[in-house]
Length: 283
Image 1 (cartoon, rainbow, N blue to C red):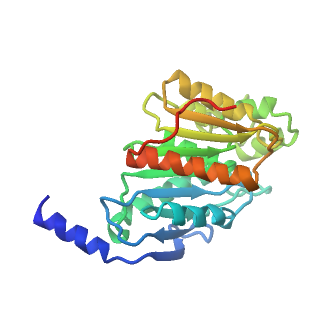
Image 2: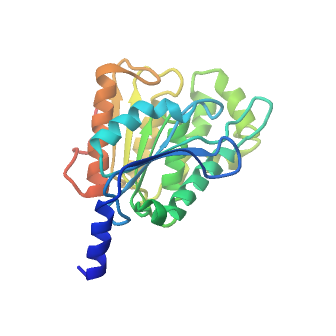
């Protein structure tokens, strides 16, 4: 190790923890993020966890992930955590697709730009989301990970195949919502459905993925996660599907604790080369 790198390591240990709230990564009021920087951080040693909230692309807020932020600050003290808001679609046709993924990409670019100032490693990035946020996280990891900086993706009951969701969800609201959001049906606008579906972007180089879903989810059917799991397996991409029997669209208590613990092990394994889970499907 050179003298210069020794100095950098020494300087990084003097950095205290910081919380930066409502940092603007764009000009719109919704383009805000909370940034949690750990003590002793450096560009070499501090991975980043990016969180994206759910809400059907039309609702939700970064505050929805506060319990996860608190858990990971405590249990991953060497990680930086970035929790973002993004522009929401409206029923009067404002902020339609691809607004949300454009914001997510812009947030990643902002993290990249700020890596020196924040002293974080922009080449060791994990993305995690719930529901619509999981959909965005997966797209970041599979379709927009051109420099392979995203090393891991966590999907909490997210939509993965929007054509199937339109046709087979069992939820009568989806055809109307998706037709508005994606500006047509799978027949009238197939390109939007393809580019917005994470399963269509998977390659053999896609990053390891952790998938968690409730067996009785009536909002996003568990078949969406099963489809993702199958496509990842077909490309030999490291992944795990965990299905919680009887749970619906989100859960609390013991299963939530188990979810956080599995996310923790997955992040340690895939960003720190630590031994982790046996990546086999769990039912």
